Image (cartoon, rainbow, N blue to C red):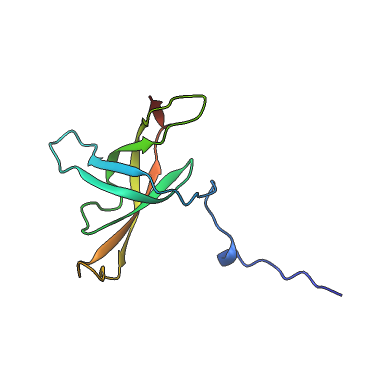
Length: 122
């Protein structure tokens, strides 16, 4: 006979969207209108609610608003060419990570939530 264990709140994923382990090229830039550094990296995961990336340096802080541009792969029946998906996002978390073994640089994980819908163009 099997007993159901109660689920602890710490065991429940509080995200509203399922994350997909997708590696997509992404460009991040501060959305404040100032000339700012463009950061290029690859997503670690993405959902309809946001994305997660890892960087070699902490260019962003929680609360920062970012302009995000993702490179979307060609889609059968839609376009044989890569497209661009863009939106505004807010940094919700910056987590220090272990140094990269090849470069010996400290890394940081950045979680950002989308503030509007992704606009896709091909």
